[in-house]
Length: 66
Ligand SMILES: [Zn+2]
Image 1 (cartoon, rainbow, N blue to C red):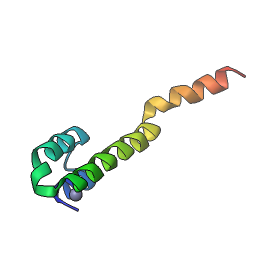
Image 2 (cartoon, rainbow, N blue to C red; image 1 turned 45 degrees about the vertical axis):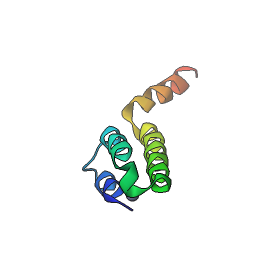
Image 3 (spheres, rainbow, N blue to C red; image 1 turned 120 degrees about the vertical axis):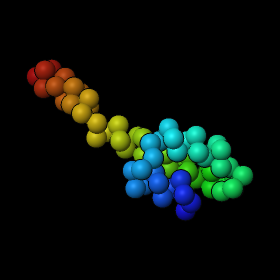
Image 4 (spheres, rainbow, N blue to C red; image 1 turned 180 degrees about the horizontal axis):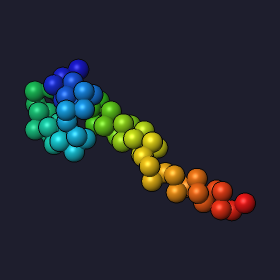
């Protein structure tokens, strides 16, 4: 855990800001943790996409095919 994890998980930082900070703070947080943070950002982005409202259009398509 570092400031980026804390800020991102408390929604104070957007994924893009977090990515930028990872690049800037790589030397401070360490390369290994930088990789962990990037992984976290990506998995969070994938999860976020699933719950986004535009996913509903896929549901409409499913109903429409009936
Ligand atoms: Zn961290």
